Image 1 (cartoon, one colour):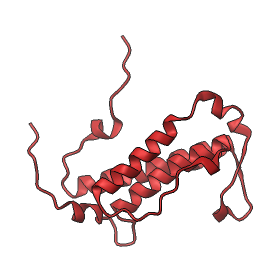
Image 2 (spheres, helix red, strand yellow; image 1 turned 180 degrees about the vertical axis):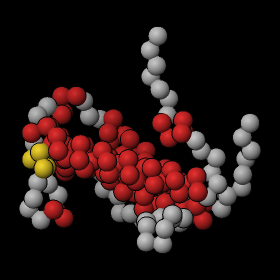
Image 3 (cartoon, one colour; image 1 turned 90 degrees about the vertical axis):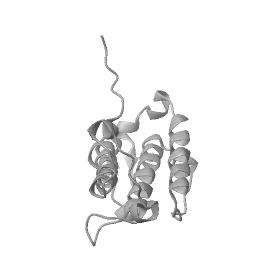
Length: 144
């Protein structure tokens, strides 16, 4: 049985693993941006992505941002991704360079999401939040 621990949420939200690393709030913001913009770029619908000004300071505000991104992603269908693997994908900070959609997904978007979600998870674990691997992985779609 897990014991409930008392945490100052503000401390957790501003925690980081290293002095030069982004804090938990920023890790969540980047994970959300990577998810929404990754899908938007792969489907050619960047203009439809919700904007978030990165002003969250509370758990409730972060949860609202996550929900906003989940709702946005739920609006896509497999048909939206037709041709995504060969789409030219770029972003402003790449200064005119691009990747194919397949390269973008495999070498940028997916690793970037995992990096920031894993870092957020590690910050929480490091600070004593009772999370485990199953919490990170979520429910498994086992078949019988």
